[in-house]
Image 1 (tube, rainbow, N blue to C red):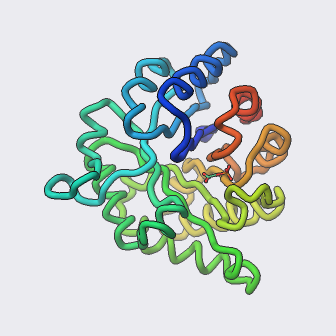
Image 2 (cartoon, protein in one colour):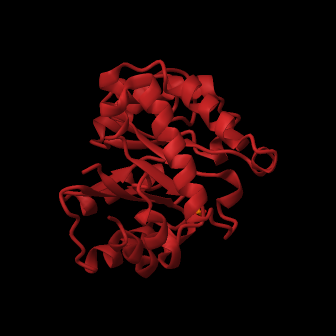
Length: 252
Ligand code: PGA
């Protein structure tokens, strides 16, 4: 079975003390992932080591929310994939829509980020998804196709099979407006088909595709039940222990 993943994206929230307490509360639930499940926690950089220490168990992993597209050098304030690797961090979100929008990250730069991650044993959680105006005009599939083509389709078979994809329609992020399970399944199927056309079905059928955008305990099970939805990338609801534990439980 494909990996099923519940991924928390804390964004720029929580003090160190609150972050530590939140992880303790989640771990207290005692939920153990099945062999095909993975629980990821994308925490702010200064909390990575603390999160790694606490989560250091099979199926729980600390993740970064971003890394720079260059490997080292005079880039004040940035963090490289080599640094993540040296900390033992094995996952990194790449291309979140907030970074595309506020930091002007484009598809070409994200291709470089994917490369530096893979070259340093960091698995990218690659985000794609269309803004509202694009969906209103019916252009969402072409939009996502271009994101995949320009950031992922240069990879080799061995590389693409390591990637985790997160489909996050921009209009659903932090808005409380979730895509319906039919909309999510339709886009996830489309993404899998595109990967299949480029790399073959044997690869496409193994790549986890997460849904993100206002996932909460009350809608997670319905979304995750869709055939091509392999879990979620969760912002707001991942800051509340009980909510996120329910989301972890909702995985296939
Ligand atoms: P949200 O964020 O769950 O708060 O909508 C999801 C994300 O941005 O990854």
